[in-house]
Image (cartoon, rainbow, N blue to C red; front, side, top):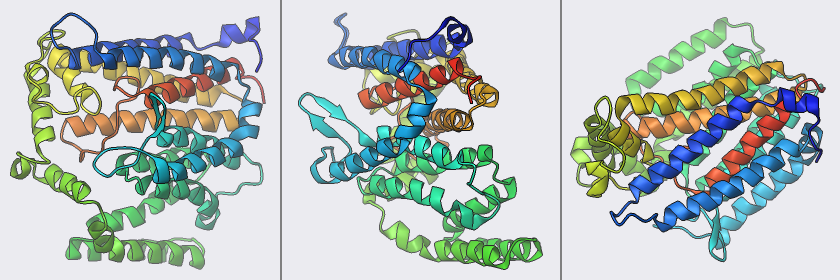
Length: 409
């Protein structure tokens, strides 16, 4: 820890700081609206969110003061603690509907998967920043893939499919920033594409043929070609097996996404009500506290997963544009900062944090619009959730701290 000097205070990114606070305040207001019962008092959830926001400010302060060298040195420790907590939640964790996602400490709950996201970012940045790290062949991606897949597998056991997706989507931009050729990024996606389209035999056969032709004509090592091709084919053939081993509610969410009207009285209900709420907001919305979908409790999980629908109903299209603009401001400022810092580790950490924010924002909003299956992923800084708010604000603090040390190697 070190106190910032005058030069560092000058380099401090006040834009990211102020906009982050603004989004957190908007989140508290929207949670108040989503849980408002008409008696003029704040709900218990709002009071808890305010307490978590204050704790988040403290975490942000710690993130600002801790040096990037200290973070790099502690990355393996944070990663190990995250894995231990993820393993513990499978044994003594609590949740609902058979899920185990939280650890209870008296009146407080901690969601280890939120901590794990940023622990993975730190350990990946440390590994990729190493001068000895080479990324010019697929085989060199084995170590970062293992770093990501171990916590992903533990989170899938909770089960929490939505959060596990974030880990994979964080890895790709960090690899790109570390220097991986774009063609390899596309080839990394080949097994996932193969798994998705494997249910259509004709489409999968065409995909495999095109992939084989592309690999045959490329100038990669034969071992790399075989690795990519066999992995893609193997994932495609495993697709029915993986589908059958999903939880019932996970399969129903995918089916409801594909045809919500067919499941309008079960798993498709949330998507339909969300789109009704968003559409009813029109251009300028119905006004704060006046959303009918929210007031009559037609919209489930409105203070967590579907907080964006409450925002859209009460503040309309323009309110949504403003909030999305605030998110994009934070993310683009972070990416600009990643290009300015001289420390390779710091640049990779900033890219990882910006990617995590973007993925969570895009997936959550996509769910409310019916563009993605329901995943249970919160909207960072806006949705109710203490662990998410605390860790997100702490991660923003880390970025702000790196902004003050942008000239350090």
